[in-house]
Length: 75
Image (cartoon, rainbow, N blue to C red; front, side, top):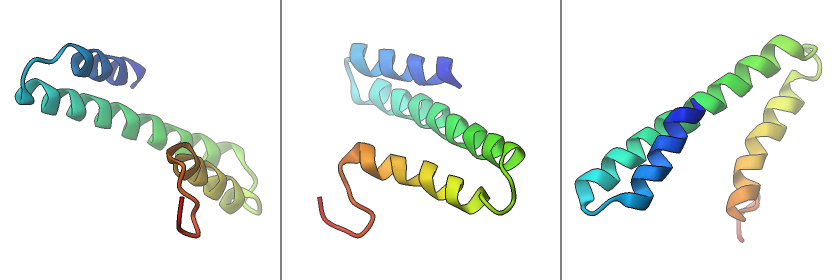
């Protein structure tokens, strides 16, 4: 997971053509999706059923916050 993201970031930094950049984006996206999936599985296994929706929503909202986008719209 983390290794795949790191390889993608290093490839993006060192790329000289579009093909390498596209391959780097694939590595980075696969790594990021793996981390997200692992977080969802961890939350589903460790949280109480009554609080699970809150925690899954909280983790999902962190992605929007890091981009500077509010879930209600606007920046």
